[in-house]
Image (cartoon, rainbow, N blue to C red; front, side):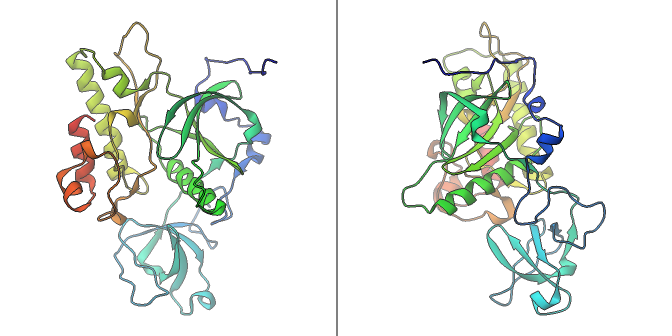
Length: 316
C-alpha cells in the first residue's frame, strides 16, 4: 500500500512552514524552566533569563559560580528561597544554586521553540548520521525539512535523553544567523524525540569538494561565509558557543546544486551536538574529529575559540 505523502510546495521557505495562526500559537512550546514563551517588556518580577556581567566564585556548595556572559535562568527572586536579601536562585546548564543578584542584568530574550506533533511529519530517506543520531529528509506542512532523531542509548535514562533534546533545542533557538542552520521545531513525544531543522538541498560541503576543481572566487566566498558564522557563534550570539567539531561534513549547502554549479550558494554550519558555551569550555574529554583537532586539543584536550579557528583554516 502506498504511504500518503503530502505534496511538496518548494515555493515556500522553511520559515514559511511555521504558521502565524492562532492554532500554531497554541502549539508553541514554553520551556518548563521559565514557564513562559515570551520575554516581558521590562525588567521582570517573574523568573526569566539574565546575563552575568561580572565573575563570581562560589564560596559554598549551594552557590553558583558566575562567569561574565553566563546566561542564567532565574528560578526565584524570593529571599526566603535563597536565604538572604540580595541573593536569587537560578540555574546555569543543569546546576541550580544561589548567586548575588547585582552580578546579572536582564536579557530581553526567551528561547521560544515550536513543539511539533510527530504525526505531522512524513519521514523519507536517511540523509546522514551524526553524534546526535540519524538525520532524515522529511515533509512537514508541505515543506521539505531535516529531522534529527535523537540517538537512544540503552543505558541512558529516558528522561536524560529527553533533557538532552531540550538542551540541544534551546541552544539552536538562541542562534539566528544566515550561516547557521535554523531550528523550526522540536518533537518531545517519547519515543520520537527529534529536532526539525531547515533542509539543505545541496548536501554536505565535503561532498561538493570531493574530486572537483573549485574556482578560487567560490572558495573565498565559502571561507568568508564560514568565518561570519563562526564569528557570530564566538562573539555575537546571546550565549557564545565553541563548535568543537567544525569540518566540511558539518557545513551544508542550502540550495540545490545543479549542473555542478557551486557559485552563489549559501553555507550553513550545523551539528552542535559537541558544542559548548565558550566560557564554560576549556578542558574536557577529547571530542570531535581527530584529523582536524588543533595541537592543544590533541595534547591536553583544551578547547577554545582558537581551536575552532584552526579547524576553519584546515578546511575539514
